[in-house]
Image (cartoon, rainbow, N blue to C red):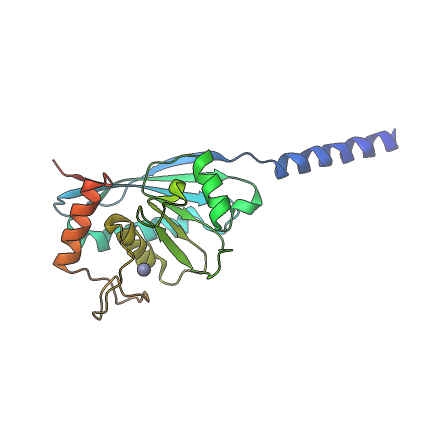
Length: 216
Ligand SMILES: [Zn+2]
């Protein structure tokens, strides 16, 4: 009897282990975040925030980053009108950013763009804490167009999130050199400004590509 019970337990553990290894890629939970409305916007952005389970990112950590990005983008009269937070269950290899697994993830679970993926780390070399993939630099990896990948190592993550989103909205990897500009290559807490010219380019490019909508 005792032996039988043990082997039954062992079998259950084996089955559980196998199930864990084969966790399908799936949206476990979806939530629409309500961010405070800010002034009169001319353009509206709908954003998807995708959190990989086991990445170390939590809802509590992410919500303030979305709010901070919304405040930064408001200077270009862009409002985050809808933010959907999606919790993704997936095998452990998907928790870090690497082109092949990122492509598989994006292909298997299509999400409305632009999407920000919150991942643990990166396996890419050179290793960037945060990456933005627009349309111009996604020809060999089309599934990743209009996505941002933020690792846990990202400094000033609310500012980095806005910075990477601007790359995607402008579809440009260009950096600025003016002090205090959001698009400096190195993010910093005081670097949050966008020039009227950057705002104009962001609005026109992202409206043309369908990532922004003109407010009615
Ligand atoms: Zn950049």
